[in-house]
Length: 115
Image (cartoon, rainbow, N blue to C red; front, side):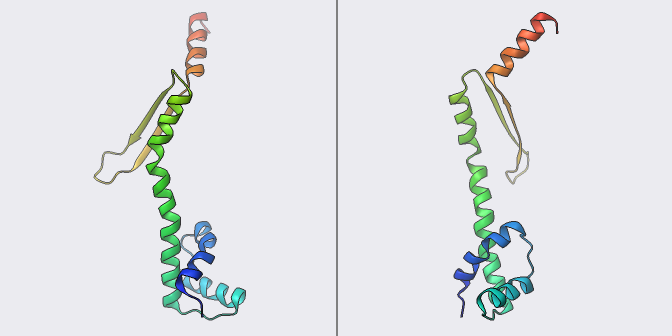
């Protein structure tokens, strides 16, 4: 008998590749790979847990965008970073614009030469 936690850990890569994996596919995979029958309810719970792990990692990465922007500024003095979010009640990432100091210097150089 497979536990939900164990099953979710073992289907995590499948859920990462296909977040909408069907319960039947999870059940068939468990039967083929581990020769164990899994109920629809257990497959559903395992998929939910695996999705939370996968999507949680995306949420954590979005939280770290500000840290990443500050790191770009720290390691590339003179650069400009703009992080834009949508103007809704739910915080949604929109764009990141990065202008490295070297690119700005090159652009100024070519503008001064009339190119």
